[in-house]
Image 1: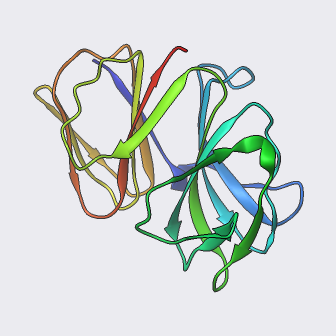
Image 2: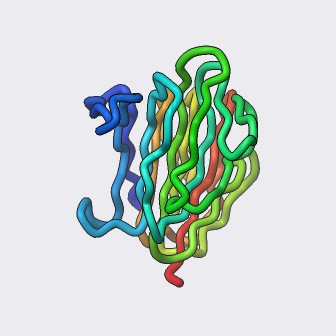
Length: 178
């Protein structure tokens, strides 16, 4: 089983069209222009609407800063990712200055996101792990150190024990075709 990984610090930030923040795209899978799953880390700098993505399911988790409000739902560090319809383009209100968020989008298939503080036995064609503070990913008899703000993923994983140990928030992501 071969894993790939990318850290947000190694990705050049791209300014949003509305100037309200920046995005570091970690992965657009399986293809950059025809993705089923897209993951990024964004810096939200000011209040304003999110971009509309009709036909896309989105998840957002605050990973730095005091947080924000979407749909009158306050989101702060430690909260589970908020899932919403990407076509709605919600208004974001910052709580106390800028914040960092994990942004996950899925436009076809079935994506599930859950806490990475348990063992995963992957039975899907794609599996990923995102960690805020870093740690160690053990899969089978191998160990892979993970830096903070890193995404690791595997296509066609072997069914074997996957264990993550680390501090702070981390999530397993599993994708299957619809």
